[in-house]
Image 1 (cartoon, rainbow, N blue to C red):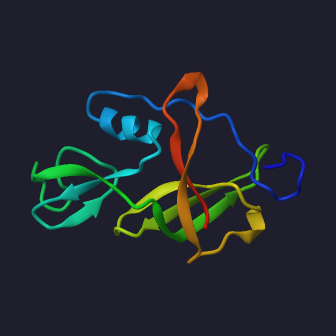
Image 2: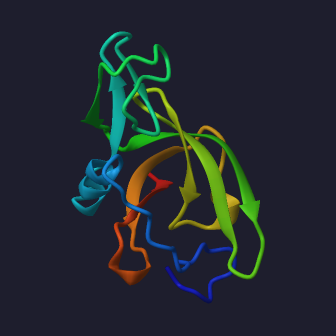
Length: 136
């Protein structure tokens, strides 16, 4: 994206995520361009953020599964600071909502209900890329 075009979201320096044994599979998949979500085998429901127990039942009967990487903007806010950006809740096609950024589009084009797809943005210090969303 052009950094000089008015209203265009430009890339910002993103800190590398803190990786530990509990979230390493999520970030390893992100390095491969795959968005992972949690899946509760007791309720057959997806959840985000992935973790070792179900937010629905507290059971450890969960696994990490690949999401389609598509969804709909549920809510958003545009932060008009030194480097403007859009923060949003995206409802994934699998059901859970993820707090994220909307990127690669003019700020004024973002709408609730808009279809989006995951894109992975690089982080500093060669950390794992961060999942964000761009309009389809």
